[in-house]
Image (cartoon, rainbow, N blue to C red; front, side):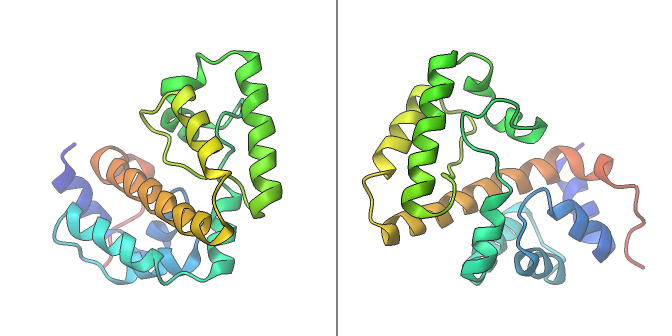
Length: 177
């Protein structure tokens, strides 16, 4: 499938179907509604720019709820979507590395009040451990801004994949009429 065909389908899906599909991208109801209500998108770049823009308008509570449903980086059995996003390292790390991720993830959650979020696709376990350790040194304000930036990156990756690869097979829902 081409990105053009995927974007056409994205633009044509009825609102309830697209809202359900977008749950796999971001949990924020406001973000999903904004993305859905501002169709059609001329191209993937316009969709991704809109995603970034709409994420900036999401409440702190919705941001927290969006992060809750992300699996922990380095966790075993993270689920199929996250396994794909973390595939560079998920199948190759040993038990001691899983334990280190678990310990550092817990330290991060205790310190900041939400789970460590990072765009992991294409990154190694060592790189992600270094990122996690580095982010533990941030102030809560600085870390919150980084978390939002990482959520935006994840949303962009997932939207791109959705339009490029998945949208036509994810829903047999009729297009808008």
